[in-house]
Length: 515
Image 1 (cartoon, rainbow, N blue to C red):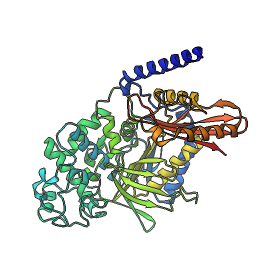
Image 2 (tube, rainbow, N blue to C red):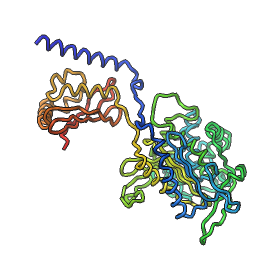
Image 3 (cartoon, rainbow, N blue to C red):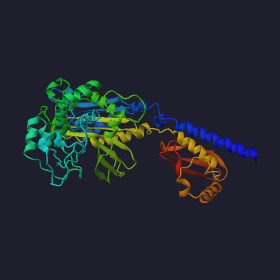
C-alpha cells in the first residue's frame, strides 16, 4: 500500500512539475506551425500541366477568348503557365506569360491592401468616417437616421451605394475633380449603409481618393512604391506606359467576329479596376497572399503584416448562397460567397475555401483564386469583354486537388493537447483519483458526474474488448481534438476541449463507441 502511495505521489509530482514548466513558457513559444506533409506537391501539379492547359484551352474556345494567359502558383512559386491566341489580333501578337492585360476589378484587393497598410501605420482607422477625408460626403446616406459611412463599409461594399456595373466601368479615366463633383451633386443610395452587400465601383474609387488625401500621393504611385517595386512586379495603370509588344488589346465578340474596344486612360476610378499586369508579375502578388498562411512565429516580411493579409481574407460581409453550385460534374455542392477587404471568399459544401477576385471591363475579363489550406492558386487573364473566368478557375482548382492528390495543410498536435490526451488515457476507464489529477478544469466535475463517467467508460471498454492500440490525436486546433482507442471487438472515439488557462485544462469530454 505504501509503495502504491509513493507511485501515485511520484506521478502527481511529475504532472505538477510539467504543469509548472508549461506555465512558465510564453504560450506562443509552444505553438507548432502547420505544414504540408507531402513534399512533392509542386512536382505532382507540374505533372498534370497538360490537363490544366487543355481545360483552359477548351473553355477559351467555347467562350470566344481572342487570347488568354494562366498561371498556377504553389507555395509562392509560379510553377505552371500557359497561353493561347492573339493579344493583338491586327499584329498577330501571340500571348504569353509576360503579356500585360488590364485585370479590371482584380485591382480592388491591391487598393484594399494599401488602405490596410495605412491603417497599420496609424494613418487612418477602418471605422473612420469617410467624410473626415472627403467633406463633400458629409451627411450623405439613404436616410436621416443612418450612421456616417465608414472606410470599412467602402472596403466591404456595404456603404449603401448601388451596384454600378457597367456604368462604373466606363468612368475609368475620370479625374479626381470629376469624382468630387459627383459627390457635390449628392449620391443616390440603394440601401442604408452597414446593412446590405452591394458591389460598388464608386466606393473603391473613393478609397483611391482617400489614399491620395492621406499620403499626398496618387493611389497608383503609393501602390507602385510600397508594393509593386518591392515585389519586383511589372505593372502599370496607364496603358500608354506598357511596351507595345506586351500590351493586350481588348475586344468584344459581336456577330461572330472581334471588335476592338478602346483602351481607357488612367484616372481616379483606376483604384477600382485600372491595373495592367501579366500572369508572371501577378503571381508575385498572389505569392504574398499565400505566404500569409499559416500563422507562425517567423520574422515578418517587409511589405505588410501577414496578419493584415489574413484579415483581408476573412468574410466581413455576407454576399450570397448558391444551393445549386457544382464543379461542372452535375453534382450539387451548395456554396456560400462573402466579401472580405477587396476580396471574395467562397466556401463550398466540403468546406474548401477559395480567396480571390474576378475582373471585368470592356475588352477584358480575369480571375484569381488561392486556397490557403492547400497552398495553391490560379490566375486567368483574357482579352474579351467580361470574359467569364470565375467558374473555370474553381473547376481547375478542384480538378488539380483531385488529380494531384493534394491534401490540406496538417495541423501539428500542440504539446499541451498531447499531454492532456496521455493523462486522460491513464485515468480511463475508472477515473481513479481524477479530481486529484490536476488535469481537469474547475467546471468539469460540476458538468460531468464522476459516477456517470465511470459507468459510461466501463461499459464502453467492455464493448470494445481488450485495448490493442491508441491512435494519434487528431487536432481541430491548438486546444481541441479527438483520438481513437482500438479494441479487439471495436473502437472508441474520445473528444476533449481545453480551457483558455495557462496551462490549459480539460473542460469538455465526450466518449462514444464507433460503429
